[in-house]
Image (cartoon, rainbow, N blue to C red; front, side, top):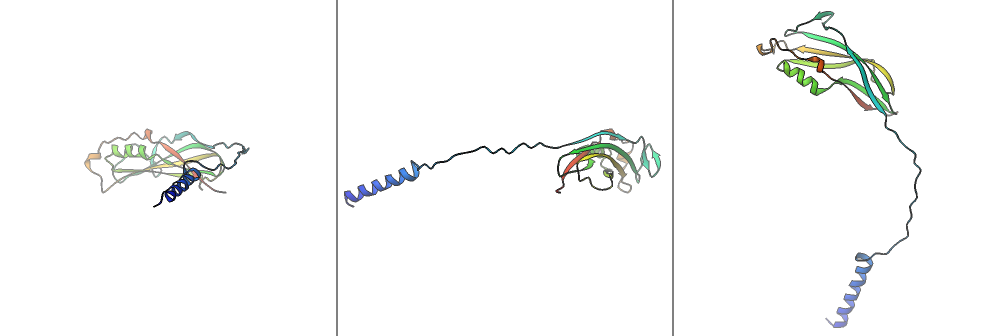
Length: 167
């Protein structure tokens, strides 16, 4: 290859590098601030939770349970929801349930259902909520290991879980 060809190729490569890689062409630009206002997060508060004095098997108060029993206790509280498109459900915190069930060698099942309001909560506001906690003592699957077991159900945690309800 001739020296002049090599020189031309080198000069061309240098020009490409300066325009595209090592240097760049500048274009004008500008910015402006948008006055977009503010947004504020809503809130959810479950408070003043109280439970009935007795566990009930049907309408009968129960102080001790045996395999085959199903006992229920109602708890009430106030749920306050603030925010557009907010809704909520109230149930039991899974970790607190696991601890109570373990105290009975996992021979009881503890569940909760929100019974009031009767329909799902789908709007902001303050609601009186009722949650029924149910303990089912496994009849056929119970073992002697669960005799005299005690679960501290005062440690059960009701949990309000936010839902998004589009309008």
